[in-house]
Length: 222
Image (cartoon, rainbow, N blue to C red):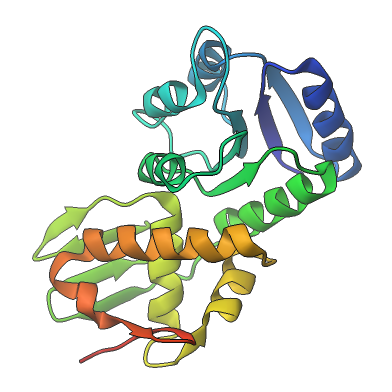
């Protein structure tokens, strides 16, 4: 069971998602705008936040930016838009997944389950070292030249996945299925965006994520 915060200005949508969440024994708290979501996150701890972008008083992006100043709660973003710019903004703010309206409540809960599986899995106490790159799976910290590198939650998950499968070619389908739990056209584009942001964060080690054209990716220890 997880504690979810559902934030959307459409009451019917909130109530529908709440009913589906109850079927999975999740506890749900509701908010109808970004300001309410921000206030609740300052008072309570949540396992996952379902957050709409377009809302009155405070939009989803503004609320998430404020929330990220004190919390790394996983976020599933709801949006009526589907362009690349919105997705990049969201991922840079630490969005774990995106759903474009209209969508089915069953699809939302599948995505919620996939995010919770990723974020609630306890990693073994283990350090990975490669030259000046150090990764702590337990504390979810990444260091390059002894300086900590900050990433969005999904970039951490993607890097950890690559390292645990280092020197192994992984298809795009395998990566999306293993990290998201399912695959569709949106996730295919989403993977490209996360790879781009991860390479940017890794700086001198970006080249270790090798693109296998027409297949997928591989993390190489060159």
